[in-house]
Image 1: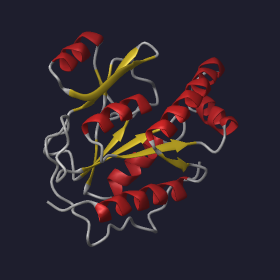
Image 2 (image 1 turned 120 degrees about the horizontal axis):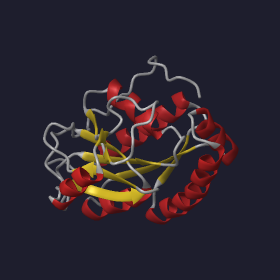
Image 3 (image 1 turned 180 degrees about the horizontal axis):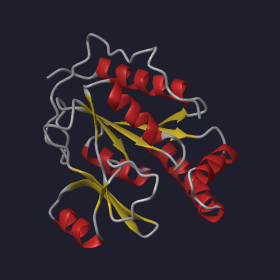
Image 4 (image 1 turned 30 degrees about the vertical axis):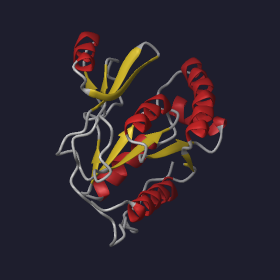
Length: 215
């Protein structure tokens, strides 16, 4: 995958209403932040796109999910908040997640946003989590980042350290997620070229901000 360049900065429209993040996780305040859900199969590049956007613009916050899975050798220090199952279940039972699910035997959950999380808030979560977010915030922008084809997706998964068997399992899961994303009205972003995909996601966010009702 090509590396993203900084030659074309992300430009938000002058009409965009970049207001501080309100405490959400319940029915959304229409004057609150724009919530952007980035879903897609493992290896599609959604995490890379999210990190590039958050680094490029101070108005964007990146939600850090909790998980009970073990840390991988290639995980960035801030990839997740890594906890055991008991700690995750305690936070869940306190109502601390806007969405959560169990995938391949491990918990994943997105914390309820707080006032310091940014003005545009990116959630890197699966489609099942996106469904839960839409229930509390129907105005969320949901984007499904995908590889151009399954052969490329398998190559990326194997290159990042997933074994062949695990990669094949993820390919099957990707087929299910694509169907669910289509049912929920996700916008599809094909990540054949990282620079282009980043610009496309930035343009979709800017376009939604331009139509966002002011307070």
